[in-house]
Image 1 (tube, helix red, strand yellow):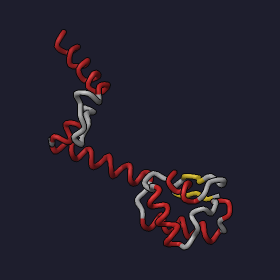
Image 2 (spheres, one colour):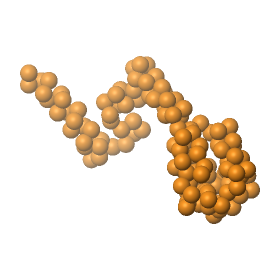
Image 3 (cartoon, helix red, strand yellow):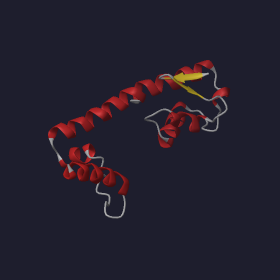
Image 4 (cartoon, helix red, strand yellow):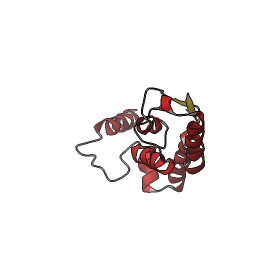
Length: 124
């Protein structure tokens, strides 16, 4: 059984599909890890030896920010935008699209929630 940062990787999955279950590793990173360590991406987690499991865990822990560390960093970045008073922070705070997506035809639900709150305040 391979456990990395408290996440148990399923034994029946291939390495290239099991590693992306960790928050912060995608399929490209999983393939890169397999190639650098010289393992076939089609190798199943159950077929790994103890030494191979240790090597994968060591590489992932040394080179990648994962799970709670990454989540805290992202929350801190968003909080920084909000406290700066930037447009990006305003849009995060109001749960609007941040990166230039449309709001006239998409993102109706967050706008409806915000407008509903604004209408209730005006009626009082």
